[in-house]
Length: 450
Image (tube, rainbow, N blue to C red):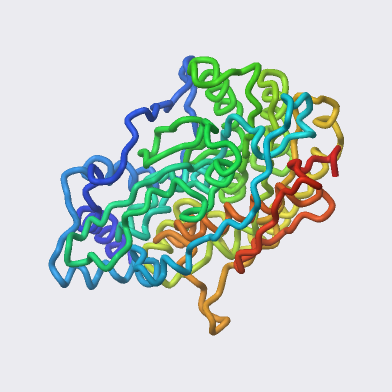
């Protein structure tokens, strides 16, 4: 088994990685591998993944996707039904955003509890590889190594533009790879939906970035745990203050914070991944945000059940290898490891609710935190047979969201934002159900206006 893994992880990246220069890379991305005082920006995953990442980046730009039929046959194993979108499939993915336009507030809002969608000036995001959208474009790039790239323009909470390219040439011109993903009908993200109400909204991320780079106000980095949040908050503060496009004092800001997956995946390796350690780090980050960034509404997402995702398609060699690297604690079956994982998973969510329901973030008109729980009870989507997992929602590592997965998550987060706190869905809807603001109920719901 060891020799097989070595062959796949050293040879496959060289054979199947597309030429990344042909994809929209935004040169404005920033390297922030460490803070000014020299502390590392994020907690690395187990060494096997770090070696895997470094191996790919040292060689990636020297190779192009092969055109020979044998290679294409092999690569289709990873593509399956999430290939570059054909025209018929594209029609089924269209979101048909049907919410009616409502105007921004007639006068400048004075309270975070009275924000219409058109009042939001800036979007931002903190988190890990799920917010960085690692692997999201495996729909167009048939490679088991794509999950080490952050396709930030597709991120469900912060993405705003991503131009895909058909790297396979004219012989595959039946595939729809010309989308720019700037409109919510094409790809559902929170910024794309908000553009319908305020086309001048700022902060959304574009294109793709390598493992250590952030872009615009998408500050999320792969591998981050809750103890890395303070560094992300500091980077967010610096960027808002540095960039003249943003106004710290006047802009109303919508921040989505999604963290906890790596804490759970490494709970058996790090003592501070305990529920108490997790919530302490999260509280420190929220307190720093409240103290330093005015006019901010925080969407705080609760974590999904890690175990089903971490063990998805374990009969696939690449998926199994990546899962053991990034989520080793969820893969272990000895003793009571799985029981502790389930307990921690549940406790993380309970402590998040307790923290926000304490009211300590509801005592200001300038700042608030709202729990958005659409992932709490989410199940792995199934094919029509009800037995086979629908791989089209996941990247080729069977862990991160694909473009389709981000599209579904974007819609679900939007729905949560316009559901009262006591009536929020705890599972994403795959039937394209859409909750809309209206003139009767125009505000993003918070604990105080619900």
